Length: 125
Image 1 (spheres, rainbow, N blue to C red):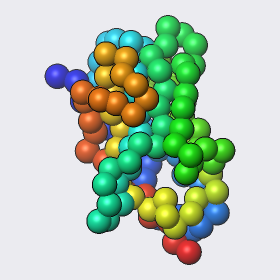
Image 2 (cartoon, rainbow, N blue to C red):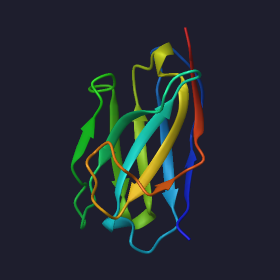
Image 3 (tube, helix red, strand yellow):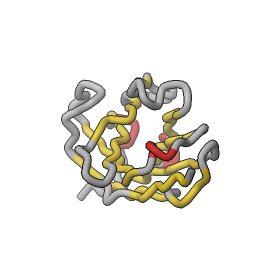
Image 4 (cartoon, rainbow, N blue to C red):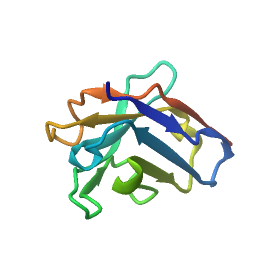
């Protein structure tokens, strides 16, 4: 059973930084396309960014316009972990952040087959 576990969320002031992690229980992590999504209160879940499956290289990345230039996604296949580095955080980045995974090589925004439980990020003004 594949499981995804996010960590690293918390409360940060506007302009600050956080790094989220997503650990995955699998022996074939490098074969999964991975992504981050977020959902703010009262809003629909939205795509944040993705990183393609990789065979040792870092993988290709793509980002939503709202986070481009501020957020960076990376992966460490040896640790079965994906990261989301968030800089220059804004109050509108406040949301529950979810990681997702798929073996199918979906388009960046999905669909994804496996999801984590989410981690709360709150940015105060």
